[in-house]
Length: 100
Image (cartoon, rainbow, N blue to C red; front, side, top):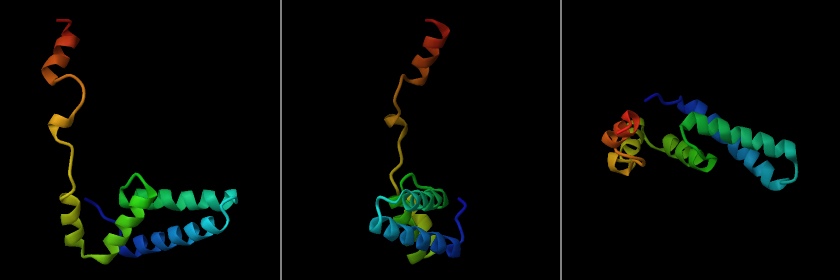
């Protein structure tokens, strides 16, 4: 797993928080909102999250704890098991393809 440099994470998190404050001060300003959303997207990509709020939380955790602890924390997250998969089972899928 590749992780970003802590200095870059800190810089992007500061940028995100600054634009968040600006957006809350002037919610009708489309330029400020667009820049805030861009900062959120950058943080999402950097931290590998789908939501800017999750990315900001992950960035704060990443900066607060050691690299080993962060990696352990990421490994402990619940993952989808094979039984949670949707759709026909593999054997049934082949029957549909074969026309049986």
